[in-house]
Image 1 (cartoon, rainbow, N blue to C red):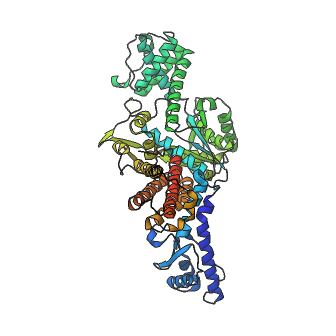
Image 2 (cartoon, rainbow, N blue to C red):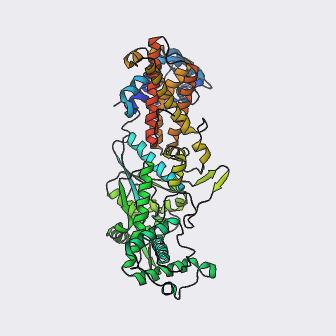
Image 3 (cartoon, helix red, strand yellow):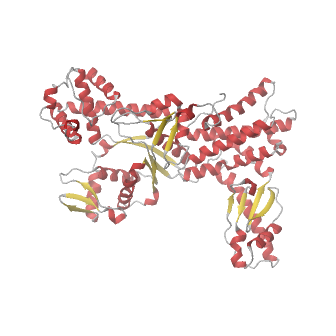
Length: 595
């Protein structure tokens, strides 16, 4: 496989060899007197007017040699061996040495891409280490909304990138199917069920009101008929007042949940499971349609039935990480950098959510994973330190734990902001967003920014067929390349890759140089995007690549009369098409042949 190290570092290694040769020559000539040569740093340049690579070695040597950096740079450049891979060398600023790659060196990327195809840019930096990525993990209390979609697209793309650089990736959805929110959902479903049985219900302020609750209630009614029916007068008898009547909405919904459990007995689980399974299946289907497939759906309810949490608390007590105060047990999270200690077991004997969560995070490593990437909402910022504390207390190296905080999404239709409220039921679901803009636009737009940056999702832009729409612009580049080959076929021609590769030396135009340079950067972009958990680097790269191609397309003819030049250019755009396909695939986006 043509690896990252081969395709990117080879040129840097070659430049290192040239510089070391120059330094050794200067040493032998008595120009320099160095006891040792410091490590060489060679970086790609951001501004291509300054070449393709640059080194600061002259500045580093200024102090030990007691000479001006620019004078040192001039000596090094003069002593550099001639190389067919280097077209020009310049000195910039106080003494930076800039290298311009030759067209021969740049064009080597074309046969490399065509040989590796969909594996180009892949490498083994991850050394097959096992990485656990948990993302989305939305409470199964309602359909996924547009904010969840950002988590899904981001997490899935990060996983794809990590696989591309050699990690073994496991994608997991933690199903929060235990706790109060699920009980509120069950109560909400039951009340809607009672209305279908003919009861008149004043719906609680703090219940789930979305139309999906009615749909679930209809399923429940079809399955159970009136077996779970109770008179409204019995259900609401002597309950505390709800918020509109001067009461407390939290106290009211809690009392209603207890009443439902008392009246229904075993039937409460029937209601609970009906709501859970309906919404979890809906979430699963929604994500699959978006192209997001999890390796595991990990049930919180099943997990807390095991002894894992109890064993963790018992171990922490033995180790002195837990103390008792006012009948409750507290974890000494401040010993590990948290701002305050955390309750793990209440005075009534109930374990807190944090206790379960701490055990779950530690369990990930006990399952054999080397690294954990935890993707959660920005509102979890204060929760991260206590998770890190729990991992440290569990003997886990927190350097192998990364929390990626995903900021909120604001949806705009035109200039009007769309309001979203899960509990109130007035929100735009992920499914509705996908139906409006399509999966490709949804996934691409979701990862265009750093995850910690707030996102304004522009519906009109995502649907537009214009150069301002980045995903349309990129896909159009791929479609244009495909159209060139259709034109070739219509003229009775047939692409010969062998001829194309043999005539790459004919690629001398500035647009060709720019495109070749951009193609050569792809492996580095993939590596950076993966290791930094920043897929937006890939979206920006693909936009730049599309820009380079469109400029080339608008300036030059590909199907020229010169057979060698024709096939050389076709080889170049074939390589470009392959990189567009590869990059879009990592994001989960299609590369259409026509638009």
